[in-house]
Length: 64
Image 1 (cartoon, rainbow, N blue to C red):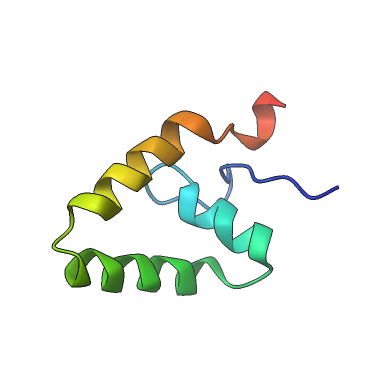
Image 2 (tube, helix red, strand yellow):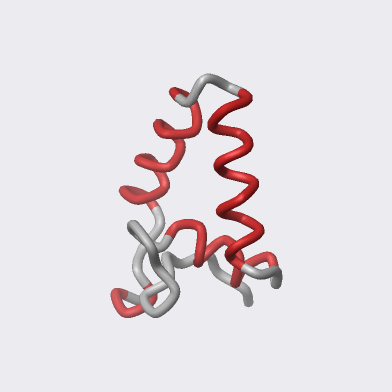
């Protein structure tokens, strides 16, 4: 079964984008670019809030 984890080896800030990239089987750089585009399209606040919630809710790979 596939589970969503924050990446330990492919992280820039907290590993949320790296984990999403691995979960969706796409390059994490694409997820980061989409995050930046969404940041500017929504004036930032919802994206930052969602990222912070993701950091708090999604476990690290090594914590499981």
